[in-house]
Amino acid sequence: MRIVLKLGSNLIQTQEGDIDLSFLSKLAREIKTMKEQGDEVMLVSSGAVLCGAKKLGIKEKPKNLVLKQALAGVGQAYLMHIYDVVFSNYGLIPAQVLLTSDVFKERAKFYNSKNAIEEMMRLGAIPVINENDTVAVSELVFGDNDFLAVHTAFMMDAELLVILSTAGGLRDQQDKIVPYVEDIEKAFALVRGVNSEFGTGGMFSKLSATRIALSLGVHVIITGKEDSLLKVRELKTCGTYFKPSEKPLKRRKKVIAMMEEPKGIIYIDYGAYKAVKDGKSLLPAGIVKVEGVFERGDTVSICLPEGYLVGKGKVSFSSDELIKVMRRRGQEVKTILKTNKEEAIHRDNLVVF
Image (cartoon, rainbow, N blue to C red; front, top):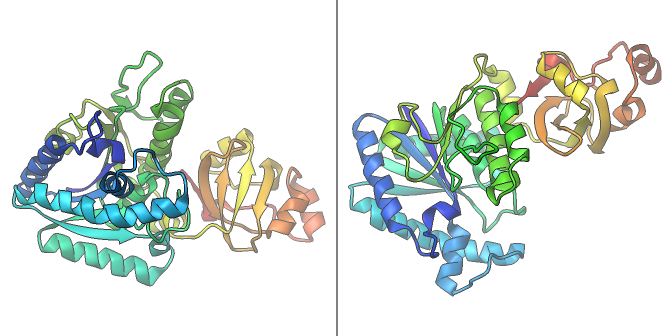
C-alpha cells in the first residue's frame, strides 16, 4: 500500500514544548515494519518554523511573513537533522522534498517532482515533504499542510492518507471520537458545533482537505499519535475513518481539481450547491457573488457564501458576463448575453468535492 502520513507542528513537540523524540522513534519503528511488509510511506511534515524558533530562542509564534520565512530557513535544516538522527537508528533514510504550489500548476514541474519522489522510494528512502516556506509568498498556500498532503496523495497515487492530529480524530458534541464517517457533510456539521482550539480552525482545514481526498478515491484516517500505524494501514483506527467516494473523479476532473489554477471565485447559494452535488450543471441563478477577473474557459473555485470551498470548474462565461446574469434564469441569461448557453459551468467541466 502507498501511504501519505501528515504530521503537524504540534505533533512533533511535547506539551512542555520539547521535540517529542519518543513519538518520532515510535513513528520510525512502525514505518520500518510497514516497509518490511511492502508498504511505501511518505511523510508530509510541518515543523520548520517551529524548529527555527527553538534554535533562535523565539518563544512566540511568528505573525510576520518575513520572520516566518526566515525561521523556516533556519528550522528546515534542524527538522531534517532530527528526522535523520531518529530514523537512522532504525535503518531508515529520510529524503528532503520542498514543494511550492506551482509544482501542481505546471505539468513539467509536476512530473519532475513525481519522478524524483518515485526514485527516492525506489532507492529505499523515506520522502519527508514540506512546503518551501522560505520562498512561499502566502502564509496559507496549502492550508497548514493539510492540502499539501492531499496534493501529494494525488501526485503519488496514494491509497491512504493518514492525518495525525492532536484532536485524535473527529469529535462529536460530547467530545467523543466519531469512529466512522460516510457522509462528509455531516462531519462539517459537527465541527461547527465544537467550541475548542481544534474545532473551527485545525479540524475544519483537515475536513476540507479530507473532502477533496475522498473525491479522488483516497481512504482517509484522522487520528492521534498514540494510534498504531500498523493497524491504521489495515483501516483500523482509534481515530476517525472516512470512506472514499464510490465514484471517484475521472482523470480529467482530477486534473481540474488538483492542477488547474483558479483565476477567480464564484460564490453559490445552498440550493445551487445541492443541485451540483446531485450532478447538475451550475446555473447563473444560483450565483450570489463573483470575485476576480477571468475569461471563458478559465478555471474558478466554487465556494458557499461563508467562503467554504466546495468545488472547482471551467466557466462558460467571463467574470463580467456572470456579474450581469447572476441570480437570473434561463431565457433571461440567453437574451442578456446573446447566447444559446445557459450553464455558468457545465457539469462535464465541474468538480464538486
